[in-house]
Image (tube, rainbow, N blue to C red; front, side, top):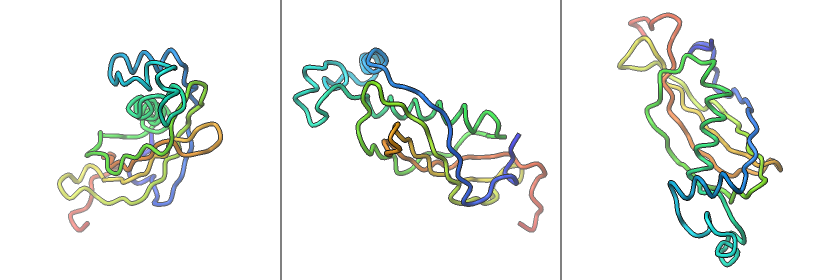
Length: 152
């Protein structure tokens, strides 16, 4: 289990692999983002996407799953305080294979809770060519092995 003390600013890790299928793209869009370019190949061809593209929210959900499987399940995660600067960089198409790169940007003890620290990290979702398709910064809450001293 990785704790707050195990994380260093500048640490970079890469995780996961998930190939997006046409059926999954349409299923997600049908339930959560029913715009024509996520549902209908012919309609999508007439848009700037040039073809059926995954919803950005679908891309975010897949990258979140890769983050959980690759990082959070082995971390003393206590949840998160939020996400900043969510950006969709380029479309994700059927057949694209996604992975994630996570970089620790900063960390500090939680001033409100000596049992945890705050860790700001940047997640970048990449396609099979290594091109960024999505990014966000998250503020994770991570348990400490030992509560912080009162002096911190």
